[in-house]
Amino acid sequence: MLFGSITMHRHGTRGTSILEAVATLGFVGVAVLGFSMNSVSLARANKVADSTTAATALAQQKIEELRNLPLGAAQLSTGSYTDASNPLAASGAAGRTFTRAWTVSAKDQPRSGLKTLTVTVAWTDSRAHTARLAAFVRCSRVPCP
Image 1 (spheres, rainbow, N blue to C red):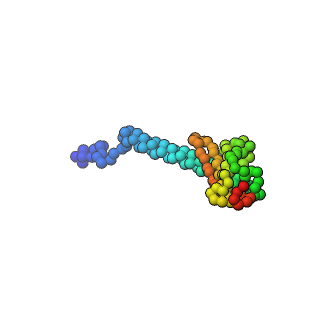
Image 2 (image 1 turned 90 degrees about the vertical axis):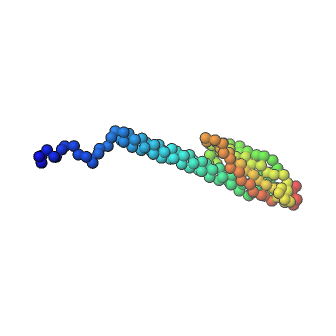
Image 3 (image 1 turned 135 degrees about the horizontal axis):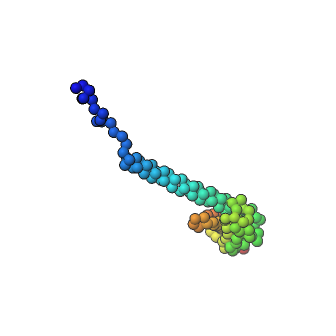
């Protein structure tokens, strides 16, 4: 009788069913897909940040160049201008991604003796972007000629 009371079927031990394994694999697959999509978004945001930094540096470079001209220089005449070497690389060399344009305001803008310089740098990756900086320069005479 003692031998007859021991059975080969154990109650309380369970294995993993195929349904549980497929569900687990599906969950892991969705998680990995989410992480990969997140890394693509982060890479794209990083690229836009790099381009924005480069565009801002190109705009700042042009503002400094114009502000260092002598008072009354022809390049500070009222009007709109573009770089002859457009498009530009991030270094300012010709032939890449960025286009740079600037305007010099009319005389005495925003007040007597000043002109406003506005530099705009534009580029396109997955969409169009612009970076714009403005600064003031003194006129050669007050009020501006």
